[in-house]
Image (cartoon, rainbow, N blue to C red):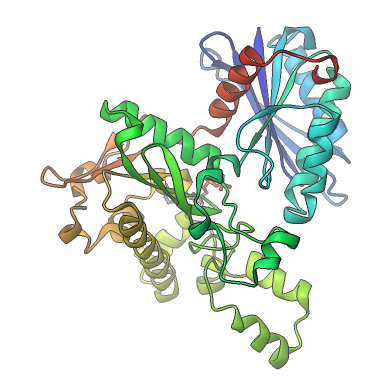
Length: 408
Ligand code: ADP
């Protein structure tokens, strides 16, 4: 039996097929540019570790329904999944679970309705996730389907950290509060860290830095998240590829008055034209690092600002946790950029955080430690694996929850 994990974005569909009981990967794929009239969708597909053939295709896919059919066909053609009866369950990534979901749940009509009600909080993400869920339920009506929420891990954050200093009624009436995202990744790497260190997570103070195109930090105390940098939406906190992260909210009033930018224009500017891209015109950290090495001053500034913001979050979360036992770098940048790791920890030696330059420059496939011998805090580089975590949580749900007819 197998578990299929589906992560549907607004114009993309990522999928991974895991074989029970070890949850080894038997196939994975990515379909991009779904619904783009001007260019055909691109599909990359790879079968499991024993067979590393990569199939690349371009297809005309106008919607998720067709993308999921294309995925099913590929899985059939390649012999990795003969029919949907091979599936023990399908696990779906859902970005926003609001305050309704603290853990993964079996999907039924009521749960789907609740996810729909949360669309205003995640207007780009939840509709795409719902499209994936609906089509999967039609294609595999007898297969249990589970929703795993990005926000769920952060539901342990206490009130004093999740509330904004705004009129109370905005929380009560409009659900305005910090929710946090990347929860599946933060939870996964924290678990991996405890395993690597051979210590119970329940006894560790962890700061997890998920640095990809989107980036967030989480403070995890004895296994529970107590604070995170993303807020009501994924815009707050660290500097990201194209998102500003923290800024003085009055900048928006000022710009609106001075430049006449309307709400959509401001939204686009903060989400798509800011962050690394706004600072130096480039949002890909690889390119930025290369340009900085060639002496490009804007690229150097972008790197410095990115790492300075990170360092401030490390410091504030050390204060929130009362110290830190383990600092984790993950995500495309965290896993691959030794320069970002070095620069964001520079000057933190008095607080027990010291990166070993040689360990930091070596790259390994699995978890590895980069702290210097005398450093009190363990500094780990951990490849994240959100799909595996979704598969694990999906398995956990289907083995512990009795199924009702509507939940299949
Ligand atoms: P997403 O958030 O879309 O899942 P990823 O976690 O894949 O993104 O991270 C993408 C980021 O990782 C990009 O900025 C990319 O440049 C960066 N990255 C990947 N490899 C390297 C590398 N070797 N050095 C520096 N940055 C890297």
